[in-house]
Image 1 (cartoon, rainbow, N blue to C red):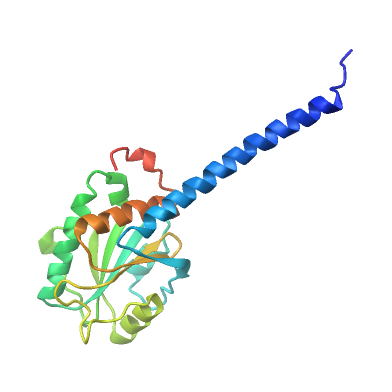
Image 2 (image 1 turned 45 degrees about the vertical axis):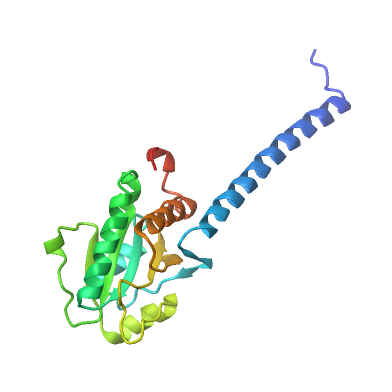
Length: 208
């Protein structure tokens, strides 16, 4: 015949369960505090709350990338000219610095917005993770205004200076990236993506 557990034993068992749960929650809290503390030290300007990006009117391939759950889009407004070409070279170095994290690399797409009638091709640079997209001036001002990106005087690129938006799955902007050293930008992306992307497992990139 099974004997009932004494009330005191049940209370002890419940106390142990609650203590274990408390330790787990406290560890999760400390982990989040540590991770967000790291983000505060990066080159990125983190947004307090995710900002939904309205993709209406954007070129369909770009809208599909932004709306997808598979990509993190680095949205960079620009125009034809050597300053933006230098900026692209700067981000090529950023991408190369992420070679130790190939799965994270695969999630990145650099979108260069161009307010000219036709966007120049990037084929001559043999880049498969970046593309230029032609938008009219009204769309350029709308999307950059929503994201809080302002031109530098009358230009979007000047002396390798520009601000990009980091847009995650579900068309949610998470951060702005002012110009910085490639190593600092790469480190920012290595922290932002695992923090906010539930589909990305940093353990799959053990060297990152």
